[in-house]
Image (cartoon, rainbow, N blue to C red):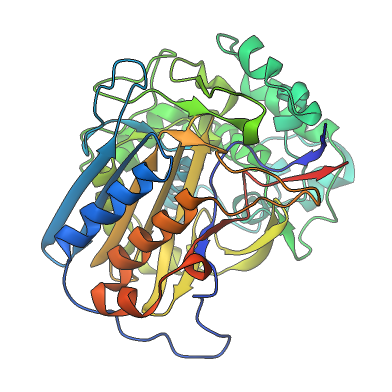
Length: 421
């Protein structure tokens, strides 16, 4: 049996790119095709379900036009159908919310991006490393602090789900997660590129936010980001249960859990300010639209968020800013984030002006298999989902000219594992 050598950054989908579709370096992104192909969007969701995804839901926006759809089941036992408006654990998309909150404090003069973390949290990061790592390095993953995931879920290093079951109702304190991250081997020197994606950075960011505001970080983000953006179905749940109508969350762990197991009831303290938010696909579109249109932070701080560095994430690389990254498609550049927890994956991307948007959620994760070289094999789900992705963001004209396996999704970031025989 393959042994997991390294688990990067958590349980997420992370940067799902349409393979072969990125705009070549130095090329100007093409204009987006107009219009929403509502029938085609539903057909591609149906195809994703038929390819093996239990349930998928999506929200697409083009200017003032919206479309929402769903396909499949929320519960494989009862065959209860998924619905487009279901609540969903969005994982590392939480990082964008937390980054916005930190940048609000930068605007108010309470935080300096290039100040050492030790100014705000003295002694938390010991030694010289604590004096070198800045707030910016936390937010863009160039701190090179290790990830706590392997320490919190050690059985994953052996390809076993035992830790997932052991921790279902375990409460992790933020300080405990930070200690696990700091105990892991550093991935490089602070501030050097490429960076290395680590959930520990955003747990520390949450502690920093709490220190400078005097308010619990999750409460502050709720008040100053979620409510200001007008999100009605987004929250940090107070219990292991997802509030409101929701799907179950099925984890396959690349075939090591067979049949897939439901983890929809789970204490999310292991993710905290790095990944515990619950939202809907429509709320995610509203959030990123508000952010990109300057309704949550000003233009200067938004420009900071969109200043990117190369960050390694699970064997791949992404262009990562401050809680935000971009993807170049044939029809243009899109900003956003993705996320995943055990059993639920999410992607949210928006055009720079927030006019063209896609957010989708999946209720089964790590459904792919790993080959003998440790690479994730493309699944029929990835091919079908790639068609939906391209149709939603680029429109029918571009989607018609780019089809087939070469346009399938290639997960390469926070859920990617490296294995050895």
